[in-house]
Length: 376
Image (tube, rainbow, N blue to C red; front, side):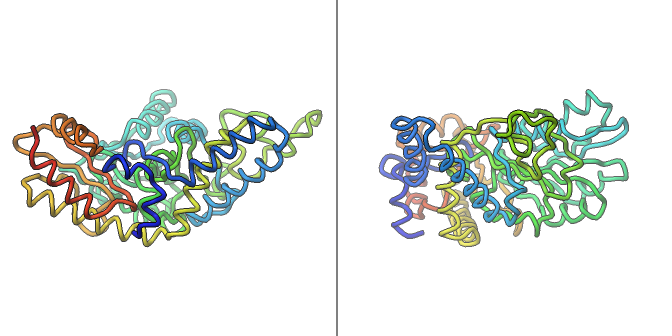
């Protein structure tokens, strides 16, 4: 990526930042959008509420463009956990139904399904992980006529394994099974097209690879399944004509916005808009291609330095990040060593996770390898 893009990320003046799978730094455009809103609120209070309402709708449209959806299929959730729970709790479960998920999921994409399983007598089918990989065939084999949902991460958090969304999504669509995706470890780094990948619903908080603020998430629900997922929390903004305060009863607003019961995190939304604008300017395919190349360079460089890679290198299974171990150094010890040298990573499940983004460079990889080769 060119130096102009890199200049938009002041974090590069202070750190080699390879921790986007945890919490990402924001860019200058994200900061500026949020400060603009805060300054306006400081100086004028609620005076410009119409303009900020229009700004929110603009970001809704940007989010739709990013994933090839319609604007009315996009909502804003407080975070990934809340969005996935809204979907899980909004389905009309029947005893004997089943949910297919995997042993590799982050708690946000397992706990809501465990809850409805216990509460409604629904079977939870958990596909095992094999040395950092999930077998697509094993996922598909668990789907039968009583499967209501397949809940899967785009990219698994502890390995960087990338699931085959198009194949699994098509299989689900052909059988009327809802395909729900935790997209937080993929969206922003990897291209996500909800049409091509047959995704029925996804949630992705902005604070990882979307390079936005925390506390705001993109929530997508395919228009055709709105009648299969009911909002479990309703508020004044969930309905048509919300400002007609005396009108009762009111029908729910058409589209995913019915899942927004009240006031939104406006600063977070407009900040997310600044991030999405940058992605659309550079191009999601270009970002993905660059990151796969950078990931391969990082893997090769670390292998040559004696590190073991625990992330699949197979075509279609690579994501933008890797997890590694060393025979002599623990992940915690290596993390602390790197941190002292202003190289930011994180340990996960006994492995060191390295997650660059599109403003990072090969030169930074080379610096990281030199530093990691001398763990003290």
